[in-house]
Length: 91
Image 1 (tube, helix red, strand yellow):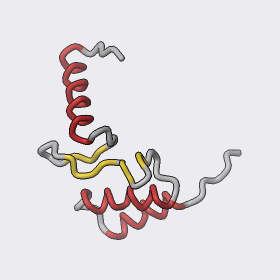
Image 2 (image 1 turned 135 degrees about the vertical axis):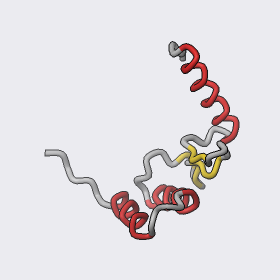
Image 3 (image 1 turned 30 degrees about the horizontal axis):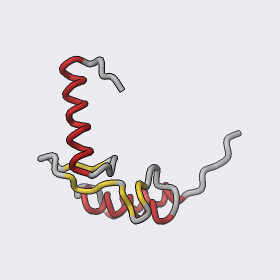
């Protein structure tokens, strides 16, 4: 993959390299203000991707509970219920 963004592209490329090194490939990751890795998407069965299965949702919610200190219990519940809801069929 080739970056064409000049200095900005180089910066983002370096951030990506740093992130991969910090997470051992566990992307996406939630980082603290000091770029410390707080949580990664690597669950017990590997990268959770979009959390759709029960174990994936459980891991994603643990990521949020660990890192999103400003989310209320009600907001976390709303997120979890939305993830657990069955998608409606497209018409």
